[in-house]
Amino acid sequence: MKSLVFYSLLLSICSGTQLLAQFTLSGTITSSPGYEHKLYIVRIDQIGLTAPVLIDSVLFNSSGSFSYTFEPDPLGILYQVILPMKNHTFRQAFSNLQHNYFLVVTQPENASLVVNASAANLYYSLQISGSAINRKLLAFHELKKPIGKLLQELGDSLRHHPDRADQVRRRYLPEYFTELEKLKSRLLAVLDTCRTTGLLAAGIYYLNEASLNQLKPEEITSYTPFLPDSEALLIQNLKQNKLAVAKSVRGMALPPVRLTNYTGKSISLSALRSTYKLLYFWASWCGPCRKANKTTLPSLKARLEQHSIPLIGVSIDQHAQKWREAVKADHTTWMQLHDEAALLKKTLALEGVPFYVVVDQNNVVLFESFLYFEVEQFLEKLL
Image (cartoon, rainbow, N blue to C red; front, side):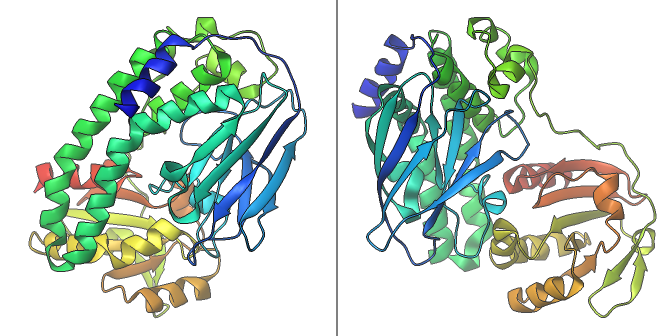
């Protein structure tokens, strides 16, 4: 019932004006041992597979209190407030599936926004008061809660049944994609009635998330005419239908580059003979990558071995020692290679990790994705 109220709220009040003004964000974040005591403030200038622009950071004290005032910025309208895990930077956290962030619209109000949340579940525990337009953003959180609940159940099941990880993921995967489609339908219904600049931008942002970062420019053409002329870079990009769409490398043959294995031996990618290979691009500093090393990849490796398909880790670390330390700490049992000269990274125009690439016996790319769910789907069909 509560979700219905929020949903109706968005449908009925998506209208407003825009003025440049000062904006203050304060509140209390209940701390958690696994998370930093620092919030990163990043500006979203383009929607899609691109990192936002770091604007500032703010520490919260031992009681969780903090306060931050945004400087009037004609280039910005939509910001992401991120709480990363310990020893992680905002670049390693902004696309985390745990959703440990929240969005803030700083225009049109001269307002104060007060937030309260739990560090370990920032997105879904968020409560706010103040700023009317940002209270409306909570309706988007309500729309996403079924997916949040599903991901929580998936995580709990994997922890309780590590020996049945494959079966658990296969159980939840169809439901996950069904919920994504429902979310997209609800977001589109909101966007169809929305005329407020900040909410339109946020709605398109969430729509891209629900589309697994595969939203196409033509899918937003019916909404961009309602955006006013603005100096804000995000609004300019949206009005021109510019989304940061991932460049596909499918069909490309990878060059026969030489990579370094854990013991320092040089190995040519073309010398690794197999009908198919799964290349897993990662780095020691990437939190989701390190988590996958310990959770999803061991069972995936075992399943691939049944079909004589090797799993090959390819590190993009600048420093080989950091890579070796991570390999040892994570107890990885699959082949590990280091792209020391960044040749594959440049060839693929790699914009982030983790990144999965399936190639054939001639090293022609058959599939690439940032998302483990999509890799599983492709491999199900392939195998």
